[in-house]
Amino acid sequence: MSVLISNIGELVTNAPSDSSPGSVAPGFAALRDAALVIESGQVAWTGAACAAPAADEVVDAAGRAVLPGFVDSHAHLVFAGERSAEFASRMAGLPYSAGGIRSTVAATRAASDEQLRGNLARLAGEMLAQGTTTFECKSGYGLTVADEARSVALAAEVTTEVTYLGAHVVPPEFEQDPAGYVELVCGPMLAACAPHARWVDVFCERGAFGADEARAVLAAGAAAGLQPRVHASQLGYGPGVQVAVEAGAASADHCTFLSNGDVDALAASDTVATLLPGVEFSTRQPYPDARRLLEAGATVAIATDCNPGSCFTSSMPLCVALAVREMRMTTQEAVWAATAGGAAALRRRDVGHLGVGARADLVMLDGPSHTYLAYRPGVPQIAAVWRGGVAVA
Ligand SMILES: [Zn+2]
Image (cartoon, rainbow, N blue to C red; front, side, top):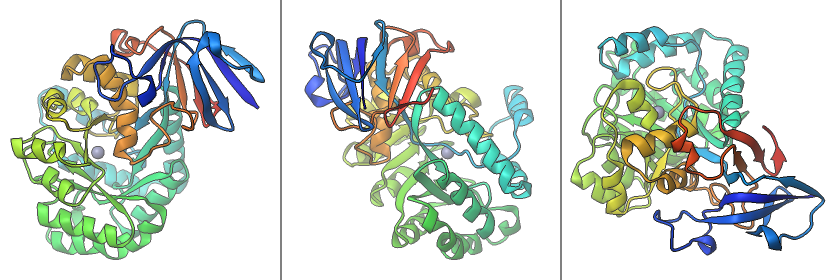
């Protein structure tokens, strides 16, 4: 069965063949007055609306914009409890520190599988309703072998992009023996988690894990078949980006405090710089310097970092608006970063674009162009969502 979406005011494809002289962001491409055909869950045809082929079913977009579904390449959704009191005190002037993670760890350990599954389903549904059709999901609030193993197993029920983050923070019971905890993360915990995960991640930051510990975690993960990604330079300057690039990580995430060497290393590598502007919005930290990264030639993605501590939003449209208004990205750069950029950060070629053969993951906006995501911040604008060619929202 084929579906023709016709009368599309702007169809963002990010397909090289559609890039126009008007495009000011590398990779961004869009067609005006366009149509798209879905068949067998994939994009089968795109082009001018007046040249569209017949299909079994026709959807009239009525001049609205259609974009690739958002790819949220960084989220922590397996947890229990919430930290609104911590947020309120932070807004009253207290700084954010990595230690707040421990309160979520305690709540997560105490929760039943059903509670965690329910929370995860609610957040995944929230994401889908806001146009996110692919998301990554990390463990990291269990921090025991059993709790990390169930975290990645639960994440695997809702996404294929599962990340083992045993090295999120050193749990209280290992406070006097951080080396012993790294051994656990690289040994029995990894063995229990690797069958459910695609990625291994480490929070390389003062107060969390240092460069040598991060290298050990990524190397052990790689030996178990997991691909690396790194939390780098969220709270201050540090070795995270260099560790990520050395390890051939798909992405270095946060990138809020970068040296010139860090920017050069990202620009010269395949490691995507994933910026998480919801975090700076929610912690009142300075935003990452997206322009410096883009001008150096680095690949930039944006993602939510949805988690109960530093940023409890699941909204990619909000992150696009923040990227434009606070990080000085153009609307095209921000939309590319939230779609194709996220796909690059997950090393996925089937999502993040709407070229022929792509998975038919689409968002229809209640507006005539992608610009509306930043132009009308905070306004519900997701008119419809298709995932794998099926209308889901
Ligand atoms: Zn994170």
